Length: 129
Image (tube, rainbow, N blue to C red; front, side, top):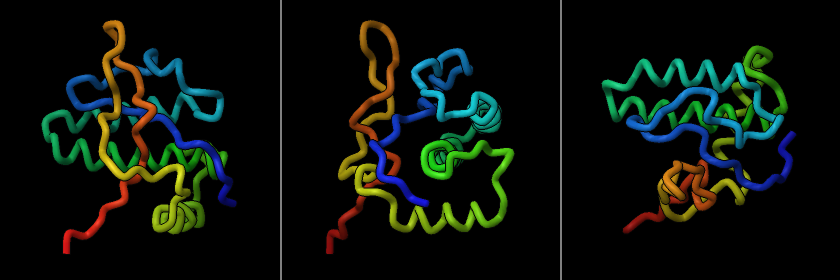
């Protein structure tokens, strides 16, 4: 059930800037507030480990975007078959979700941190060999 949609914006900032649900007003109605709250709570538990935080953030962010924008289901409705569909999705995501560089997720604008529209959930890597 893959639908071509514009790319999503980043959800979760870097470890030093991770915030609370009140800072997610820019998200549209496709996203369940409870899903974002649960993900934030989970990620905050890994503030002491930058590498683990970054890995978990990347994967949970992709999953929440997929649930909301592709599958159109909240986390509480996800079953095993959805996870399998998500894995297939990650193997061949929409081109609009793939970047060629790794721009920062959020940028500073007028003293506020805002989602960077240049960010993409997936990054194409090109072999140097």
